[in-house]
Length: 298
Image (cartoon, rainbow, N blue to C red; front, side, top):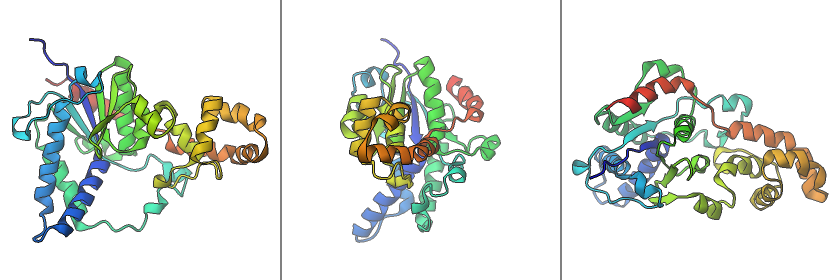
């Protein structure tokens, strides 16, 4: 019998913690006696671990999920890395409005408890199967990066060696890492479905590699990124289709487009370049020694 190939599973820590908190909050309000957040998140975290170990590269290549067994009976097939924010990668320094729409939102004791318990559950797994970043390595305390940046750094390293990799998140920014040829996949934690290159094009209207340029043009309300005022999603798709990417639009479209669209591009070119720089992943080479050691461990 052939040995199953191992995959690297990259989990977006902030995304799953936020999802668990909001699902707990909603369920807790409906339950007559309430729901203990600690027990709730332990169950959710263990389910996610079981899901992460269920991914089989031979099935992923066919855009298929694998059967999942209960946590207690789950073989530890894959290497799981959970990444949490540790700063913003300098984004607010260059763009003060970055995520300003989230300021003032109260962080409840239950949210902090759910995050703490989730990390504890992950850290109690066998150390050869799960790595929590940046918490695992005290030397990474000074790392200034978001979870997305860490995930992208590891995923792009895996692209180069075609190591099967799956990102677990619901963040559209991470769609950029989907690459069928590099065996890099995305699992949506909301829908519990795989997101392929084709489905990104159906959902967003652009290829995964153009997500960054699309948001630089159309903006991203979730992160309070403006894009070029007046362009919007429809025009952004049309311009990317016509000129290929943001560089093509700024090199050619600015001069070729007439009327209102031409004026918007000429007036907003610098803003689009700034937004692209804010959206762009920050590479985190400081991670790689820890990550390489973890991936090599038996």
